[in-house]
Amino acid sequence: LDAAMAPAGKKTCTVLLVDVSAPSMTPHLGWIGDALSRVVQNRMMHAKADEFALVTCGARETKNDVHTEGLENAAMANEHDYEEEYLNISVDVPMACASSETASAAARLEDLAGGEA
Image 1 (tube, one colour):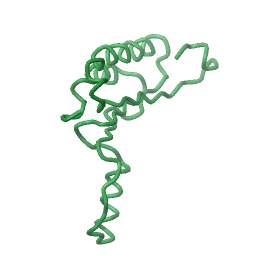
Image 2: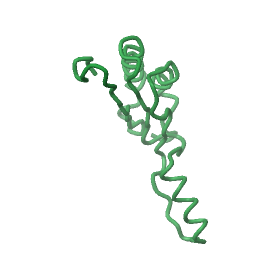
Image 3: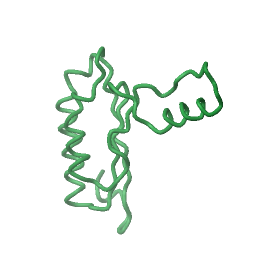
Image 4: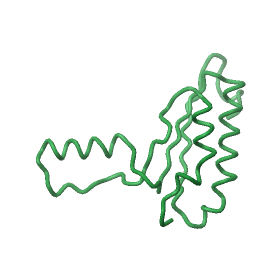
């Protein structure tokens, strides 16, 4: 995420994709979240046009468009045996310019972890 990576006048789009389900990762989510938050804060100061999204796998909740659209399409097609997909994947912050919201969400990774991880 170095400014030298992107040509002048270009923005960088980054998805912060974190698996919060693994029990072995749980003790590390605090410092990982702090580090990702600092990356976003750095880009806010030095590359305001850069964009970030935060996506967690193994999250407590399922919040993603692919899952929602699949459920809606199954309901419209009157499919009663539809197998839900993309469960426990959450788009916690959609792609947007680096912001304090993204930095704060990254810092709260422990809160986003799945219950029985």
